[in-house]
Image (cartoon, rainbow, N blue to C red; front, side, top):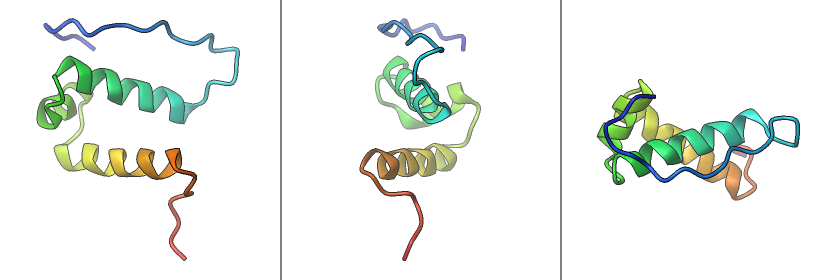
Length: 73
């Protein structure tokens, strides 16, 4: 991702440890939001998705972070 804003970087975990796609996605979304100072429209553009797509992704990531599997009863 190219950006003119420099976001603080945390070291990436060693991929050989328990690092999965959801964690990678969560980290990438957070870095985009940080780089855009929380502006969701700009972060979505940086990620190459729509603002609505980012909204849905944030909802899904929030659900999985709280132990929900995203399925409704």
